[in-house]
Length: 401
Ligand SMILES: Cc1ncc(COP(=O)(O)O)c(C=O)c1O
Image 1: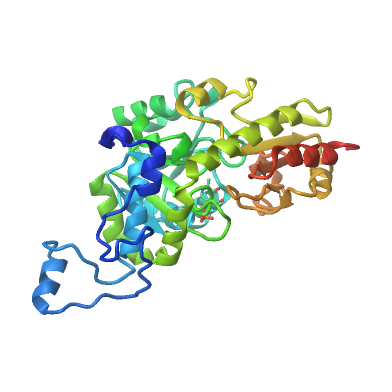
Image 2 (image 1 turned 180 degrees about the horizontal axis):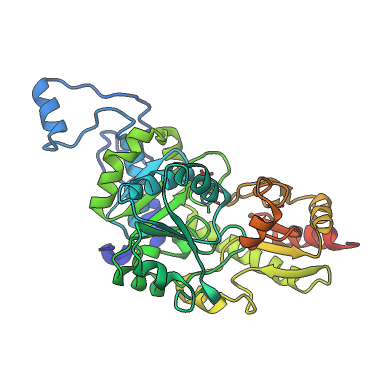
């Protein structure tokens, strides 16, 4: 059962700053030590027995656990309202570990249609060749009720994996309704919460079983590292911690755990600033004659606007812009001066990417369309530059399109 993040009577920002601290540092340092060690030594075999037998807290080898990494895991578990977390060297490390853990159950895997390209790649290049049956389900207008989810759940499944808002077209899925349906059929629900971050959305508190993050994005928050994490109930996380995480070897380095902990301290402030700037640009872009459509949950015309307002504390820093053509999209990107061309997201620097040329280049136009990706789509990660400069940059790029 998910733990209410407010149960310790501390606000989100306080837990982001102090969350995983254990107060064990002998020098009472303000920031946590970075334990750059591959292994741990023992004063005696009796201590070995106590630590390996779980009678004394300790670490044996850093692929299976490290004190700095553990502090990040405790912090993120607290922010998501989960019992425990387990860190990985990237978001894909977390996603592949969770999906491979489901493979042991052997029944079909359910996915929403709108997924990060790497997750889709994993499904097609790893899960299906390994013999897994996969089914994509739809959430018309964000709701699980009118789509094909219930029929799929009735037939049994190892789990349902989805993103909301999704990458890259910001589809919103009603988490409470979907979690209730999954629970009715005993199917675990995993949510990739990378886009909103725990500052804006807590899927476990809405009934999901597992939350996954690419910590590379908003958690780290500075575009200088790769990391990932899964959060959930103690039993599920301990199983991931003792089997998939150490055996796949996608281990987070202590240095990166420390950088993510530093990033998390300012997460709430950054998400507010990202949301404010993205709202401004979404409204500006939506009113322009060269723009066919802007996908942003903060716009009232977005099909998931109502659900988004209910389940998120802000509308986030990501938006997608539909231009009339492939050429118009690329011209817009070439004309930007402050906003840079690049994949990834969640950094202080604003970034744009063109899925048809970049993240989704490897797929046919038909497959891209089935994911809602048209040739003229541009994804924008709105950073933390001055709002006026961002507005001027976008206006300049739109002029003459
Ligand atoms: C929604 C989402 N999930 C997972 C990932 C994968 O994360 P990483 O690049 O840290 O492996 C990404 C990367 O862009 C993403 O956008």
